[in-house]
Image 1 (cartoon, rainbow, N blue to C red):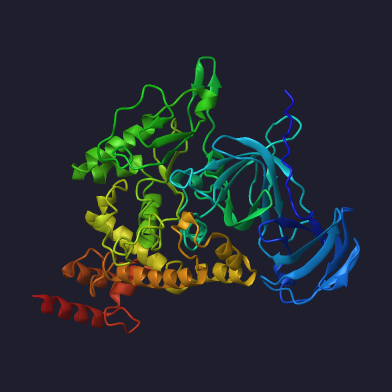
Image 2: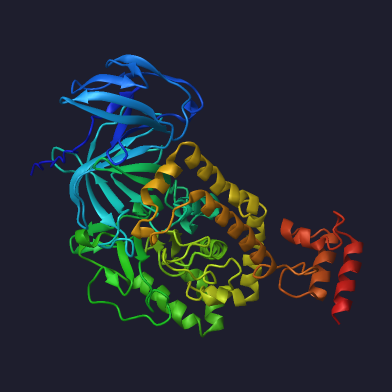
Amino acid sequence: MVMTLVMVTVSSWAQTLNIGGHRAAIDNLNHIWLCSVPQSIFGTDYEAVVTFGDELTDVVIDGVAVASGDTFRFEGISGGKQYMVTAQMGGETITGGITFTWLPVVELNGDFNDTYQVGTVTVSEPDSAYAEPLSARLKWRGQATNTESSHKRNYRIKFINEEDGSKANHRFFGLRNDNNWILDAGQRDFLRLRNRISTDLWLDYARQPWYAEADSIKNVRNGSRGQVVEVLLNGEYQGIYNMCEPIDRKQLKLERYAETEDGYDMHGMLWTSFKWTRTVTMSRPEPLPADSPIWDGFELKYPDYDETHMADWTVLHNAVWFSNRADLDFEARVDSMAYYYDIPVLQDYHIFILLLQALDNESKNIYYACHDVQEHPRLTMVPWDLDICLGQNYAPGVDQPNIVSPERPTGGWIMNLPMCDMFEIEEYRHSMTERYWELRQTVFDPDSLVNRFRTVMDGLEACGAASREEARWSHDSDIANKTLDLSNEMDYVEDWIRRRVAYLDTHLFAVVAGDVNADGEVNIADVNTIIDIILGVEYDEYTMERADVNSDGEVNIADVNALIDIILKQS
């Protein structure tokens, strides 16, 4: 069946311009054309050919008359700077401005709601040729952020061929070539960047899923890549968004299900937790539904229930029930945990949400993936939707600083992550502590963490996007009518990060002087470890660092004596 594309005409004060081969998008709210150009153009004079349609006449830019096809010099390109324009259109004089950004500009046109509606999406990348509208189905997405009173909406995009409505893949920002994309608004995040940058942090350090080592499995991604963009909806500026890949079977390289004469054989499977329930927190699971893609806060994401009409919960159900039983059975925790969960990834996730104090991600907003249920039921974990972290409250109107204090003890909130109480087990705690301090020397260094955010925020300010976002959303009900001040929020996040890392260093992951084997105690076992090192036994670099008790750069008998002094002082 041929699909007729319903085109939505944007009522605008002027038509889109082409500046140096770049599409300039109309913002009717602010009467500007917003044009995405390479970052290298900023700080220079930009000579560009300007073209426009016959509907515009008598065009004047900054006092200079310009005909379509003329070359114009835009002097001193900088963020937020406007080049004033007057023109005749339909017998009327119009006035506005041209401004530049180095972020991609995404234009959405259509009438959208909670179900997929046909519209167009135009993605103008700064280093690419003139962008044309692409046919797509779009809908609003989200849970608490998708309400009748919401203004800055999240969107799911599925690109299609205009002729017949079939899937159409497109590649943006050097990411994957696919039809399925997400626009994340950061609606409740006063920095607008927490989710994107925190996810990038995860992608930079998290260990790969256990099956990724197989020779036949390449490019496994256990996180969502994306790009900060500026969005316009039907010719009205909507602000800063994160345009990103979804978490799906293709990203995680899960095995496809197989169609048989009798139905389907399940292989790779993917679930997500979307709300807090006793089942999701693995504390008192509800019985399985008869045949449904929803199980008390969990949702089946792959295979698509609409395609197979099958929901096999066996693997996830068994893991949830194991976690529930193991809370009471120390031996079960030790012996069987690695059968049900991908331990290195679970540990990295545990440390990740401890670092970020990701209040919305300790049991919900987690993807659980099984590579092939026929091969092994082990589950790996992927984070999602990291807006509520790094000192951000659940809701903009909430003013309870103790909830988001960087010194808040973990016992008050991280109680429901699968097997989080494994930290009580010496071997597991030792492993977690070593992993933390390994990361602490690199990606978890406070300067490195702060720089991640500062670099992006400095870019938003330099290209003018920060001020455009603040002007668009300050005092909106989405943020409880508060003022949006990205620079001030960045200062808050920096202070929060530095205090949080200091808290983890000295509390949860503290290594006591002389605790060479990092078991939480200083005793003869630590002396034996130093003697082993002196005799030539190889240990990891972090044990070697702790073995240098007197901090003279060497491990020798002087460290044994220094450690014995510590032990004697404890007596």
